Image (cartoon, rainbow, N blue to C red):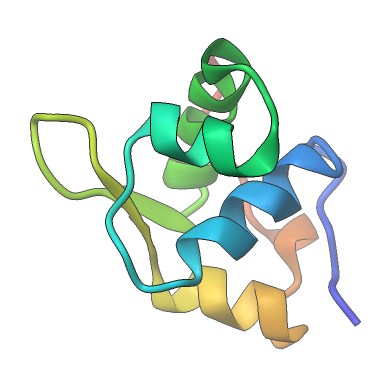
Length: 88
């Protein structure tokens, strides 16, 4: 069972994390296409997820990948309510 934080936007944040759980580095546009959301919507959610440590930006071209904490959250081993993402 996943332990979500009140700061999370559901189901979008879970969809983003699940898509990145493939192990690939993906751009916001590719993530958006795969979860049937707009690129702008995805882009807005990447910053809080990254500042909470669930994902990381891997290069200047805008590729993201999931972190160990992101995997732990998806497995139900990390309580995201204990994370404090930076405010936009």
